[in-house]
Length: 315
Image 1: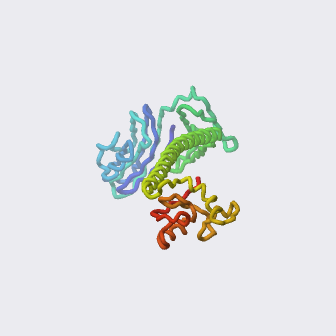
Image 2 (image 1 turned 180 degrees about the horizontal axis):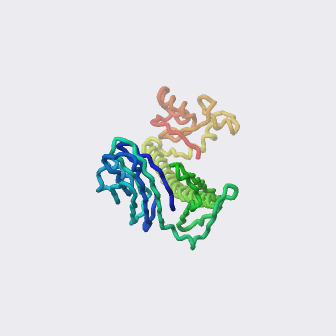
Image 3 (image 1 turned 30 degrees about the vertical axis):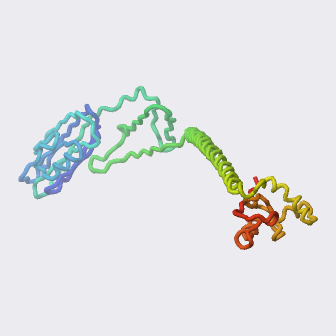
């Protein structure tokens, strides 16, 4: 690449150009300083790698240990520099320590080591009406090299240059989205099934053990009631619960099937309790409680002294 630049370097300041250069590149700068100006201090040209080095040099233009090349220039001459490592920023700058502006003409000649694209999977020269399109492989690494070429014309009498703009865009690969969404849905479904199976086993185990506990409590309750009424019942048993209907008939009541199931006290609610120690079932739990606590405390059938009222649960 070759380009000419005419710089007007301000007093006590500098002007610079920035380049991206690969390892193995070479840069040559032919300079020509305006001899009409009376300069107290000579100009100098530097080549610096990276922003940090360049910033360090701009803090003190006379310092040269932060640059790759530092040359005092006057008249006409050439500066050359070989590039030993790739960098996004290589600065070529002219420093002016005088109290007046100075004009310098620079001819840049750069030999850059470009990438070898002979083995590329795809190559294209885009145009405004014919963009390049390439389908990237799903697996593996991909690299894209963009080159502006050598047809960009630049005005030698101006710092402005024609800019080459490239728009790089990516289109969605719908098959990847659909496949990924399907795999994610399957994983979530399997996870749901596993959690449901685990929770189902836990609930089943809890229900089984809970049912056993209820049976044990009911057995203990009946056993306790039976033990408490062993001495007082004298032959009474829980079989009398099923014989309540016969006792109602003997007592003179001519009830139908539904009537025999009603409480003999309120005649509204169904019989849902039995008395201890006799074991008769004659009232609802509310009336049985009142008979035990507020009445004479005796069974309506056998008139035995009551100790407790137990509720009957239908299973």
